[in-house]
Length: 593
Image 1 (tube, rainbow, N blue to C red):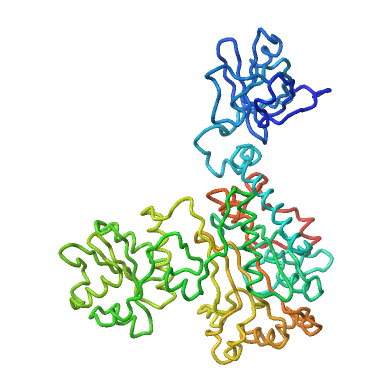
Image 2 (image 1 turned 180 degrees about the horizontal axis):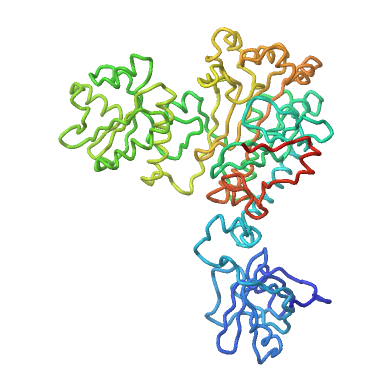
């Protein structure tokens, strides 16, 4: 049974004690991290949010406290009264902030006992994620996870202070909104008061922040929860947090400088680093041409090489047919990998197949020349030109994909990322920011047989490309920009459409009739006719930012209570079925057939 606190009041946090506290009487409270019995003396590592400190129970100093300490086990919650003393010579612990001192206990109060834990909190080996998430309240006691959330708090506060200093107001927007057809699937919420009708949870406060600009608030931001019903992965959650920013009368340069300053502040506070600005920039086309991705990792080379012209001179049918069909042949140089076995090459071929590549051709550069089953289809001068163009040297492995440009980029861009990791080409402590600009406004969906918005339907086209919107939509560039860090998109934004006629035209190009557009977005189009200023903004993923700041392997370790990859909460068993009474009130029936 646990005891009560009584008149005890905590004087210090465990991790705060230093040499300057020597001889002070202190009251500490926390969890028993470890217990060690050294033949008479009992040592406890006492833990709270601020860290660990060693507590000593000596029967010669306090017999009652020592007798109680013999009962202590891991994760008991205790209060200790004692005196701070320097550790004996040679016994200091340089790995602990409190390692020069210890607390000589005179009184011990056991506030709460703990049953044996389902997994150890002080082990080097991490428990299975499913077990950690079932007992997330235990997992959250681990110092590293706590540190991630402390960094998250400090960074969020720093961002709020930074935005306030730059004239931005934090304004809340609704969670119960109207479902719209663009973007990922919505989470729907049935309305009891309006039978048969549904709210949606916001994927973004997009049109609300635009309406705030039309309302004259000039500069808005919000650290806001958003929701998307989509397939999950390590850096994606069904509910996530973004730093949402919008401003009136912006120049892109002004907005970019604002966000770069925010990143400087975030990395100073969250990691103690001074990052250099301005960040480099790539156009979307340059990023795709060189790296195969619109969120390129620029920490290493191995850039894609366009070999379409040289490939067209070969007799290799796969290459020639791709070029004749208007496609591309590109390659990358896996330096030092000419020793790859047939199985290794088959594995790389299997890797690119999910990206719609029909295959992966290869050439090994040796001292004797090119070794490859396709070498005989190339004249010697063409082989030499390809090798020179790709910077091939003896020992290198040249890899090729021939297909439509988007397939080539997807396959080789992902293969480049795989090989960069596998070959140790990515420096571990480098932060490589890059802005990607001049995105296409639209992309053609083969599945839907229509154009869809590359970012969202409120993104403004570049002024000089506006005439192409009706004649050649695929060539229209957007006033859009993404911020990328180490190959991950941190955020994306754009200058918005602020004229009704342009917004109506955009909806028309997206395949919406006037009636459909007005049914979905009539409130916004009406607002655009009532004095809408030019405006633009950006949304940055806070969870992903904290993951990159802390070095966590998943955003789930930067969120207090995350969901699994199946969007479930193992701790509370959500989602769960509800009783018939609730369903009737909502005029719903569940049909699992």
